[in-house]
Length: 56
Ligand SMILES: [Zn+2]
Image: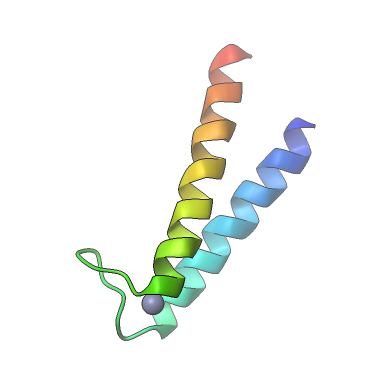
């Protein structure tokens, strides 16, 4: 369901943002292992969500 995907996308965005704010190893130029995994998940969900939006 689109709303489920949106919810997961928002949750992943929030998780990554919260990690980035707390983590001293993460910056716009580099990420720690955990930060990279959170970012990868966010990125995948964002791509899936935006692809679905484009299809209507
Ligand atoms: Zn980090």
